[in-house]
Image (cartoon, rainbow, N blue to C red; front, side):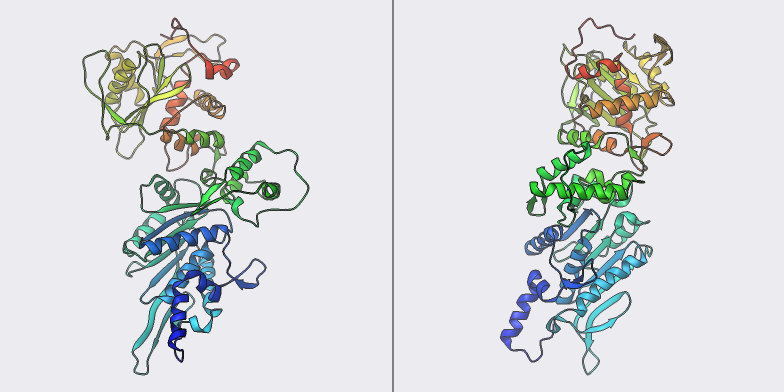
Length: 562
C-alpha cells in the first residue's frame, strides 16, 4: 500500500480496508466480463459461498484446504485468484503458487492478477520489484539498495513442470483444472510438502470433472469420506443465475428433467447458505439445459460432466453408465454404517460372529430362522493391491443385503468364510464364481461338505434348463451381459436394497464402453457389483414376475437347486 503523505487517520483506514476482503474488493478488484468489458468484481452465488468460507477459516485460524468440483464457467478461478491477490498484496513475505493444466490457462490466470493490479486504487498498489510473463513480486529497494516493501510474490506455472515450487516454502496454492493434470498425484504431493499446516495458509484444488480414477476424483472421494484434510465444495450448474433462457412454456418434461427439477426444488447447501431455485425460474433453467443438450448431442455424457446436477453426474465416466444414477443416488441415501466382524473358528454348525473394528465382514441383520438367503461371491486372487473377494448375503423375500464380506484373501481361506457364512445364514444357497481362482473355492467347499452349492444350468439356449453336476456360477460372454442387465433393471426399479456404500460407489463407476462391454472404469473395482449380479442369478425368476419381487414371499417348502 502507498502510505506516504497520508495522515495517521487515513493510514488506519487503509489498513482496515486491506484487512477486510469485501471492502478491498470494492475498491480494487476488477475483472473482464464475458462481453470483454472491465467491470468491478461482484461475486455470484458460488463465488460468494467460497469467499465466505475462506473468511470464516481465516477468522478461526484454520488452515484452508478446499477441493472444488464445479460446472463450467462458474467463475471459481476468478474468486480464488481474487482471494490470493488480496492476501499477497496486503501481507508481507507471502509466496503464492498458481498451477494450471495448460500454458494458455496459466497465462489467463496470470493476466487476471495483472488486471487486478493494473486497476487497483493507487493507494493499494504495492511497489513491484519485477513483473514477468509468469511472476509478479511486490517489493522495492531503498536508496541504499536494501530491499523493502512486502517482499511477497505470485508465481504461475503449468502442471507439466513436476518440479514447480519444490524448493520453495509456499503459503498459498491454487491448482486449476487438477482433473486434467497428467501427473496430478506426483505434483500435488510435491507441493503439499512446501505448504506448512498452519493458519493463513491456503490450498485450493479446483476442477471440472474428468471421469473417475484420476487423482482429482480420488481426492474428492477422500474429502467426502473425511479421509483427507480437504473440505469438499460442489457447485451444480443450476445455481448459476445466468444459466437460464427465455422461451415458450414447457408442458412436458423428460424423466431426466424431472430429476433435475427435484434437485432444484430440494436445494443444496452452498457454503454457509442453503440455495433453492425459485419455482418461477425452473422453466428457464430447463430451457437452458435443452439448449446444451443439442450442443452435446454427439457426446451426451459430456453434458453431465460439464453441467452436473450432482457430484456423481460430474464424474460420469468415459464410457456410459450401466446403472441408473438416480436410483443409485436414492440408494446412497439409504446406506447405513454397521459394526465390522470377524468369523471366529468354531466347531458348531453356525460360527460365532465377533465384533472387530478391523474385520472385513459387515453385518446389518443377523439371520432369522424363518428367512431364506443366497450368497453370491466374486473370487479374486487375494494379492495385495489387487481385486477383492466379495460374498454378498441377500435375503430372498425382499432382496436385501443383510451381510457382506469384502477382503483380500487367498481363495481357499475365502471358501472357509463362505462355508461359515452359509451355515450361519440358514444354509444359504452359495453361488461362487468359478472362473480362474473360483475353482479352488468350490473344491474347498465340497471338501467342507457344504450341502447347498449352486449348480449351473446345462445351457442358456435350451427351453427347459436343468441343473448339471457343475458347481458354481461361470461368467462367460453370454452369462455376463445377462446377469449385469438383470442387475441394472433391479437397481433401476428399486428391487434390490444394499446398505453398503462400497456397492453404490462401484455401481456409479461401472460403465459400458464403445463396444458394449461392461466393466469398472479404469482405477476402480467391480467386485461387489459382480457378487450381487451372481446372487440374483441363483433363482428361477422370470421377467414376468420381477415386479412382484418387492413383496415376494417364498414358501418354506420351495424347492432349491441341488
